[in-house]
Image (cartoon, rainbow, N blue to C red; front, side, top):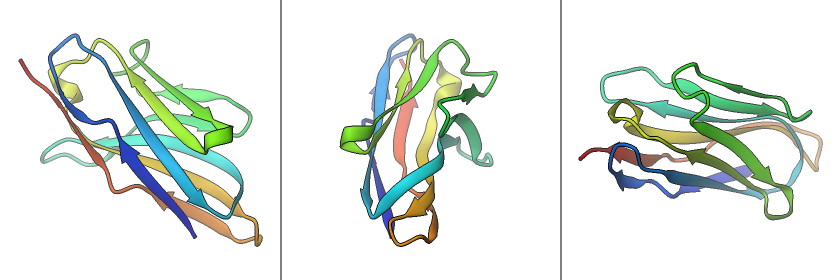
Length: 120
């Protein structure tokens, strides 16, 4: 089983920056997808950024050139650097990791979410 724990959310003023972290633990052999998603109040969860195992990244149009997804393999941690934050970036941010365990089974795990509030 693979567990994910997010951190780094909080209150920030418009134009500010935050870096979200997602620490993964468990019997991870490999991943084929890692991503960040967010859910604003009253809205459906949407994908914000993703990275595949070949290093290719993809971003929602609303966050392109402002957000960056990255990873630290040694620490099994996924990051989302968020710059030039806007009010509409407010929401609960979730990380996701999908891949294969050491035992050969597939996993598709989500974190519990971290709140990001952009407000003056």
